[in-house]
Image (cartoon, rainbow, N blue to C red; front, side, top):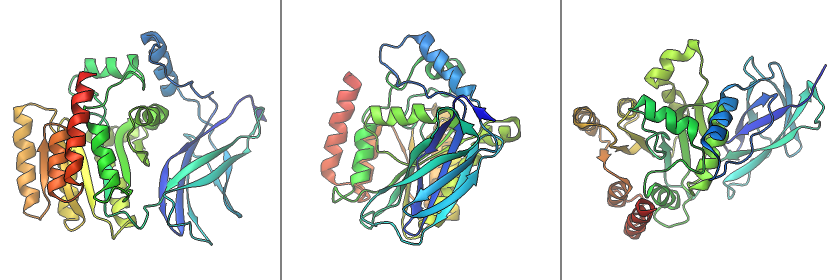
Length: 343
């Protein structure tokens, strides 16, 4: 049996020199076109509904290729496939991104051949630290504290019209560049958004010049409802990254609106010698601030500084004091914040 149309959605993933990790999804949906700044609210709403109403291809078989090596993977009931790729020949350590080819084997598709390139990151030897960042209300203004406003932003705006926080792109570029401007410190994005929003988030990062990085999103469903509401699913990828890169210290960035302070403080307690700093963007009210500051005082006893910051410029000042970015980058972030605010 053949299908009229099959799409492979490759997700940006990560790895080490002799083993890469690949993840993607096989769908029966046509890809959505890039968003436009002039798209109507109803067009944006329709596209979001299409993302949520995805049509997966359970049991699809794909072939994965790196150089002359080949592997096969089978998609689960939701169309996802994941596989670790042990390499006979390690990747070039000088390259940050590596290409993995993924091709549909079955079922047959009328739009065959179906082959896509997946991007896999390995931190270069120049990297001094890695960043793990939340997305909603950390870099992307989502207004999660207001269900109505969050719904309107999510469903009636698009990747071209949604707004980042002022100066956040300059701050993340500075962290990526590091003290020497060529460190290429990797940035990983962890979010409670569903995998259905992956294309939107990638387009948003590119539109606002935020560094590309692997994403860890969430698969919604009743069985995962508690994990989604508590955001505890973020702990698994964070621990995975810490174990994958044992020599890299990590900087954790989140916001005070949801559970990032609680989750990050738990990580800081479990891995006190691995966390260089925690930054929490202040998007909540005074009562929540007291809780966040209390958590910060607790993790400081483990030697981990946890800072509640008002904006990107304040975070840049602290990052410079900690030796994560040069002092010259602080003015760059400040100017960018002013420009973004004016825009």
